[in-house]
Each structure stands twice: as structure tokens, then as C-alpha cells.
Image: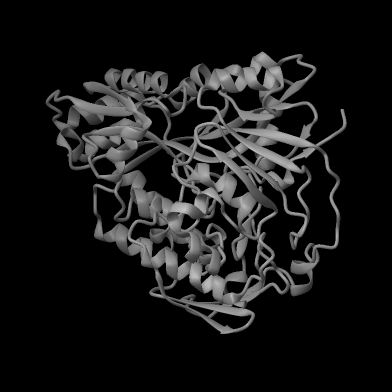
Length: 520
């Protein structure tokens, strides 16, 4: 069996669909017994030494009140707990809550909180800490977490072990949202404040904070009083290594135990005795965003030509070493909202040329912005390939490269001048945030369609078994109107020491407690 055939087989096996089923209405993820069976702090984990896990970027802040970022979640999931948690396969599991229920309209959610949980400073976790955490986020106009829970109308403790959320509108993905909010102890946070707390955080998670050497690493040690399964490795260091080559050589030399690496570097580890390559399905979709109001892009036929003109397979094979799968929808398999069988545009240069000709396109320049540094190492080459494909269809493309942070700022400020190359990885593992950001009023939505705004509300209110139908309508609207052009679902490739054992999560975020190490 060839390497690519094996890879595709593993990708299919790992592409697990997130299914909340009747949980959203009937209320409980498993029984209370099964939810608490792994807790209680009764087990003792072996030492198993230490491990260094490489991260491509360092978050600006590691405070669950103030900051919401993919890089910070690696530390959040180690130090803090949410009411629920998203496991490595993208499924919702119990966290601080052992069970939950919603009303029929899904705008009131009630969670039963686990008993006997303590924070890492030894103080008891109370329902009041949960209420405090959410209200503190809502009260801060500087919190990037605020937008994720802005639909809360009221959060309250209904008794000593129950917290209830009343939302401003029905929201079927609430279980995913609360998984991303780490709970802090009210007394500690009030004493330390947002300036001091990130440098000595206290949570209830499987690891305790040790140190943060800014620009270098973030260290944690196992919380042996953790309520759940104990972490497999005692000491974890998150090392900030931005350069892909440095991550590769770090694993080769043994200074790093795991690191995400470019697909082009996979052959480096062929035949290595001290390291291996681990592949995993990703929740990341690469796409071309479109300012539908910019010049020639305001013409629907011009926009419709673009997805037909891009030779996805050729780019994947030549530039991504086959580590991606073409797609026609903005969410990956495994994310709620993915629609089985939704069509991917076929490469059809003749049809693209005809659409351009029929559009009356006058040859005006269309910008294509991309991350020249700080993004995916292949972004510059991919952007050039896409520009060449669009040129063959008769479009005049001007490439505009910028550092990733500059591109992100342009995205956040609604300042895209034409097309842009980007990728989305919803850490909530739900398509709601993707639709909101890209198609329904977010900073990357230029169409501002009333029809799409209504469809967005429809998917929020729909029961689990009906949401797929609404998502199909959303993706169909996008395929027709071309506000966003999905390209492919990426496959993550990691280099790891041969002694390290773990299953990478589909969202690319480390569940540090699940990383293990064998003796040899």
C-alpha cells in the first residue's frame, strides 16, 4: 500500500463527525454516572518524566477572561476546565458539568456542576466562580472572549450545584461555546486582575502553572489533585518555535518532542529511529475570501468564474504533497455543519473563461492578499499558483503579500481590497462561528445579505437533526453567490519523538494531559 493510500485511509478514519443528537433537547451527555466515572482524584499517574511540545506562535495573553486565540487554547486546556470539553475527535464530553439540559426553544440551558472540584490553590470551586467568570467576560469591552458568549442575557446559580444560562436567542451550539470558556477562581482573579493573573494563573485543570518565559516557553506540572484522569506526563513545556525548519531540527535533535511541520518536510523523517511522523485530519479549511463589493468582484459572473478556474488537485499535489482534500464548503469533516456529499467545484477552465467573457470584465486589476510571512509556509507559493490559474481564465491578479498579523488586522477591520488567501479552524468544532465570521455579518462578510442573516439565525435555532438541512442551504447560497471560495481541508503533519504516544486533535490543539511517553 502506498504512503498516500495509507494517509487517505487514516484521514477517513479520523474524520469523525460531531453529533450532539438528542442531547440538545433531552439534556444529558451520557448518564451522570458515566460522566463522573473518570473523576474523583482517586487514581495516581506514573511520573513518565517530561515532554516539550512546540507551538508555532506565542499568544499575546493567556487569560481565559481576556483572550480567545487558537495558540492560547493549548495552555487553557492544560490549566483550566470548561463546563464541557471538546475531545480530540471533536466530540462534546462532560467537564465541570456532569449533565445538562435545555428548554424546547434552546434559549435556556441548565448545567449540573461536579461536586468536590478544587482549584490548584486548594480552594473549592463553587457555582459562584462560574457565574463570576462569565459575567467578568461580558463586562469587559476588551475581552476577545466576549463575542463568543455575547448571546447571554443572564447567568445565575439556581442552587449550590446548578448554573443556568438564559440566552437572548435560541442557540443549539451552546455546549460547544461553554467548552472554550475556562473557569477562574473569583477571589484570585479579583486580587490579581488582568495584568497579574496571566503570569500566575490558577485553574482547576489537569496541569498547574509553573512559569512563562515570554518569547521562549510556558511550563506546567501535573495537578495530582485533579478531579479527572491524571495527566500521563508529569512536566510539560510548551516551546514557542516559529520557524518550521527549527521545529523539524528540534525533533531531529531531541530538544522538541512534538511539532507540527510542513508537509514538504515529512521525508526528512523517513527511516529515522528516534522520531516519526504523525498525520491527522484537521478542522482547518483553506479558502479564498471575496470582497463582493470591490470593483470587478461586484460582478457575479466574475466571482462564479473563480472557483472553476482554480485547479485544486494540481496545487494540493504539487505544493502540499497531497496533504489536503478538495472541498466546496467552509467547514471540515468532523465539524458540525459539514454536509456529506456537498459538491466541490470541478476545475473547468473553459467554463471559467466563458463566465469572464460574458461578464464584460474590463481587465481591471484584482488584488489577492496573502500572508508572505507568519502564516502557512506554503502560502506564498499557493497564492502564486492561484493567481496563475485565474490569469489563465482572463483575470488580472495583483499579488499583495504581508506579514500574517497585518493581514489579520485587515481582516478584522473589514479592509480587504479584493481577494485574500486565508484558513479557518473553528476551535468550538461548530460551523456557527464560521458562518458568522465569513457570511453573516462578521468582519469577513462583504455581501451583507439579509437572506444569509436569516439563514444564520435559522441554524442557531434548529434542533440537531435539522441543522444539517439549514447548513446545506447556507453552503448552497454561498456556492451561488460566491462570497467565500473553499479550497481544501488540510491534513496536519507532526514530527514526534519515537517514545511519544498521542492522537493529535482535529482542531490542532494539544490536549497535554493525553500525551504519553513510553520507556523506549
